[in-house]
Length: 569
Image (cartoon, rainbow, N blue to C red):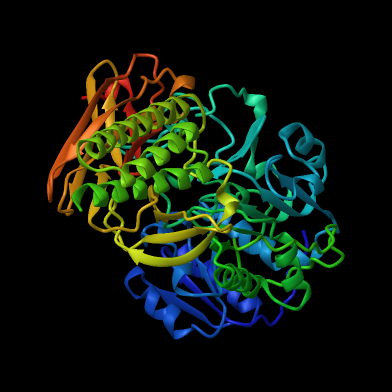
């Protein structure tokens, strides 16, 4: 076993929780000549504020850190959480941290989803290409792919935070708790995968993992139990540090070269993460990174396998007359939604625009007839678009941005109270299209609850809200509901409905939509009843309440938890 050699590292070590964590932190502090401070949950943020100018390594088990209810790194730019799931694995992590320099030289590996930027320069784009690379130890693993708290998703498999889809042993989790299907004893949520299609994160022998995937850092801000977290899975193995995204992530490009460049320039891990976050904020990118591991740890990323790449800048992107002009505004909104690949009939948009132009030149009953024709056509366009959208949601792993996420840049980010968990952990983000398209997206995202809603309207005088978490027993009637609230002085009309994301792959019922109307300064409650069959997996299924009203597109995400047969009462 390599000997621990004393060194002098910058910053402080803080410990939280049980005596073992305090003892482990004391060893880490002593070996690296840093002061050690014990903290309790109520006073931790004051300690972070006191040491705002230096790196802070917080040593705690994942359970103790999760009780904080938020990601502590939001309060400190050079923060690292030295954590693992058990006291034993935390002790091993401290030892690996102090003996990192004795590990043999190894190569870096890049795993990038085939549809993501940089895939042509990756070492692997799928599980079958990754497996041979894992037969020998690695220095750094770079990942850019879709993800959840529990996994890194690949076309032909996944990297699993638990490493198994078997039911947990000895766990007694409350039925009304958000959790993946494996913890409910009903297998992996990727039902098409076999055991051979999953790789345990803890089995991947790398020193550093850099994860550009949604929700990869989820301790404190975790919505699901810690036993499934993919970053914690890495920390249970041989990994010393995981740098990953906190919450939702829109990947404009691979950022590992930026991290390696900062480290080669002399930055420690905490400083490198600080630089990544500062660059993301300056470039208005929807990215926030966090660190599991010691922020003062020196890491050797010299002679990186990847050459520094340059990415080209993306181009930054009388009463009847008045009513016809209003309808033209609605049509313009609908036309802008074509940039989101919403299934809107562009031919009919052109037809209604020509009718509006003719109506503005007409007078009397002919003008009123044209106005009625315009209104009816817009209603039909919106109804057909929502119907087709719900069919697409039901049949695919749909996302609000589709393949257009990188076409948007962040304009602003405003802290808000999460409408689901009521914590101060959400942001309302404004995203503008990089090209000269009149389209802006407003999305609400919580670091704990995930993506909650997205809208193309900045107007506060009309809202569509939904309950974001629902529990549905099998073989019984359940319902999804939304509330339409208007402060406008005239009636509003459109189409609204719901569908389960990829519902067709999981025996979930088809979605439905209907015309909706809200009177002046009125409120309307819409409900859709559904019944889950007996073969529906007891998992957390994603549903979407979608509406297209006055040309404004809104979606609210609902996490529908199916209760197992023995817990449905």
